[in-house]
Image 1: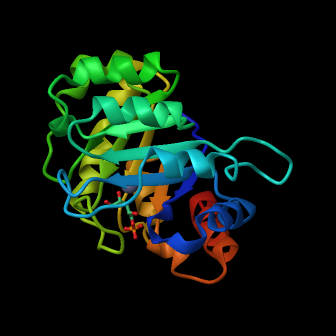
Image 2 (image 1 turned 60 degrees about the horizontal axis):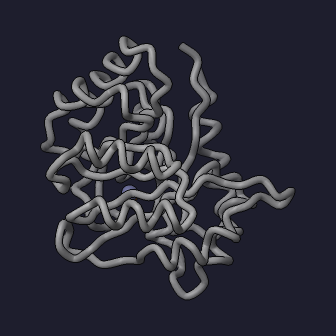
Length: 228
Ligand code: DX5
Ligand code: ZN
């Protein structure tokens, strides 16, 4: 199956004092999606930003020629439902959550889709993926954590590769159009391996925002993805 790769810079590692400008800069540098990490100091130990910041950034998430760039909201919050709805209102395009954080995963997926967004399930490094089978008809995106959620700049956990391989099989067998995204420790040097395992969408925070030339990093990632 031929896949279009997408690169989703995580603004967790951007300059929080200049987020609108950072979003524009990284889109000018070739970002396909903007990855928006929501942490609540409860489900994860860290605390980031909420729906009001998403709403403020919505108008910046456009290309120079006016095309809307999807905002990919990754909820690391518990409970999920009320905030998911608030983010849908705030202009999110995709909303993903950790199944452990929702009492009723099927209902949360329905709620996200009913609010007009695409719905994603996120699997932690130690989480099993079996539940996907029971809700796959309501899922638009599967996000594999290749670090434990909560912080940028951590090292890639290799078992994520096996999990991605397995999920690629499950998604292909379903015949559904589901993105397989990976999040955590993605760099120019490992992106190809992750794509070979079956991922098609790549979150990268520190690898991109840790360098002054965002385009150089994104171009180098695409070059690795294009190499046979
Ligand atoms: C971690 C977040 C990631 C984070 C990735 O909880 O979900 O999106 O920004 O950062 P890097 O790419 O630096 O590992
Ligand atoms: Zn994330």
